[in-house]
Length: 144
Image (cartoon, rainbow, N blue to C red; front, side):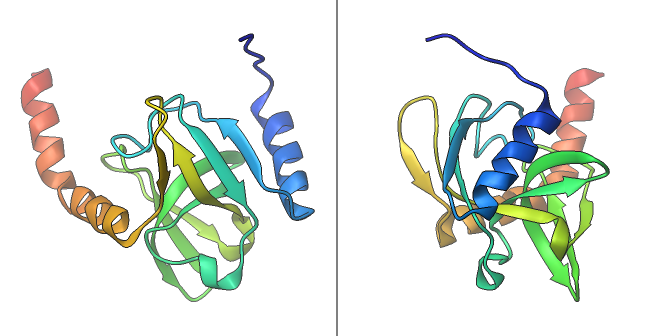
């Protein structure tokens, strides 16, 4: 299978356009910020955002600081959504509701297993998030 790599802005702007027309889109994810739950090379399926789909623990496509990110909702406060990548140790992104462009419906890891975002996966990602301080200490001890 041939791979086609195109500019991120061009790709995501077209993807957001398709989603805005009520299409469901599927593509191969590039990046490691959602590991250990969603890996580089996973096939992700995105759909349009509904008001009730912006729940804590759901994974969304958002525009942050001029770039597109696929990260998990940590919490919401008024019109602001706080996001984090499961694999990120420090960074938390702050976006407006309007910056949230799509929601992850499901994903398929390289092993071919289809996975939905479930209560269990949200719980596990919350535990993983709470372990950040310990993960930072472990990373520092391994790299020093």
